[in-house]
Amino acid sequence: MSTNVQQLFPGVYRVGGKLATKNFAPGFRVYGEKLVSVDNVEYRQWDLFRSKLAGAIAKGLSHMPIGPGSLVLYLGASTGTTPSHVSDIVGEDGAVFAIEFAQRSMRDLLNICQPRPNMLPIFGDARMPVQYEEHLQGQKADVLYQDVAQPDQAEILVRNADMFLKKGGYAMLCIKSQSIDVTQDPKKTYAQTIAKLEAGGFETLQTIILDPYDKDHMFWMGKKKN
Image (cartoon, rainbow, N blue to C red):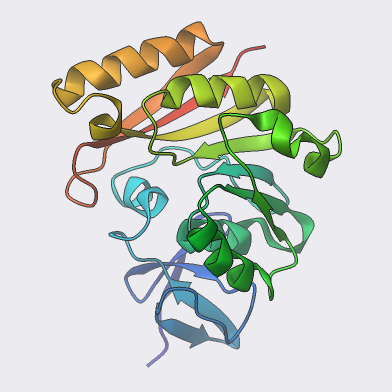
């Protein structure tokens, strides 16, 4: 029996009922995910509990600004789980500039990027975008994706967007309430963070609470107004 493949967004699929992306590096796994071949195309299952972007898609993301050919600036790439799926989505005509500050994570990220020429690992601190400005070589990102556990998450995003995001470009932020203020009601933290993003020049398009995939996390998507 043939496995059913359904496209949810360009580059994002449901394969046999599971979220998946086409493997840009056939034969290579990133985090032990299952590989499934359908009609000579290899897909990687996308774990909803290992990726906040996958969780947001599963919980009803209305629009997917990352697509084939996109240039994505990814802040907080960690060991490469979600960035590798973004690499699958943007394909050979796109690029993922993967920024990571932790040396241990960076070692793993370098290995993940080796068979993925569209995924560029950069050792840098997202709070200081001037550190990696030269790597972008004047290019502006279509999408800024951020998953950084810092109290000033909104300020980091706005600072990077001012330098690297196209006018009308999209931003996606994983708001980690416990990293901002562990004593405060997460709802209040989310509201305060969104207010800072909107004051920084963004229009909010959608917010998604990521429970049960990630506790005390909100996924925010916005568009740069200027």
